[in-house]
Each structure stands twice: as C-alpha cells, then as structure tokens.
Image (cartoon, rainbow, N blue to C red; front, side):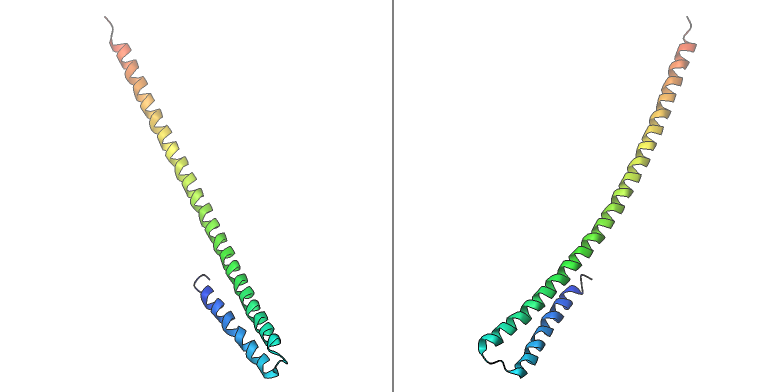
Length: 110
C-alpha cells in the first residue's frame, strides 16, 4: 500500500483539473467564480489525498504494531527458556558441589 500511495495522490491531483475543465465549458459569469471553483476542486483533491495518506499511515502503524507484538512475544519466550536453562545449570552445579562436599566429609576420617 505504501508504494501505491504516491500514485493515488497523483491520480487524485490529476483528476482535479478535469472537473475544472468541465466547469470551463459552463463559462462562469466572472473570474472570481472561476477561481472559487478551481480552489474548491484543488481543496477537494488535497483533502482526498490527505485522507488517503492518513489511512495508509494508519494501516502501516497497525502492521508495525502487530510485528512489534510478535517480536516482543519471541523475546519473552527466548528469555524464559534462557532463564530455565540457567536455573537447570545452577541446580546441577549445586548438586555437584553438594556431592563433592559430602565426599570430602566421608573420606576424611582420622
């Protein structure tokens, strides 16, 4: 959608003069009316372009939000697994130390 955005804006701006050309056939009574009609057409095209840009930005923000949520979930899962492995290694180390201390106490009779 992001790559299509400039094309949509240009299309909207390209279509705006068409309405002005159609209005030129009617030949407004004075120049002020013609300028007003042109300003309205350009304003409408600009407003439409701004709406398209805002919608695209909203959609992109939603995609980024979903991707960030998935990445945060993966980080949490990885951290939890790492913590589990570290706890298991610490437990094994403590058991080995305890066994070594018990072995020293039983074999050290005078």
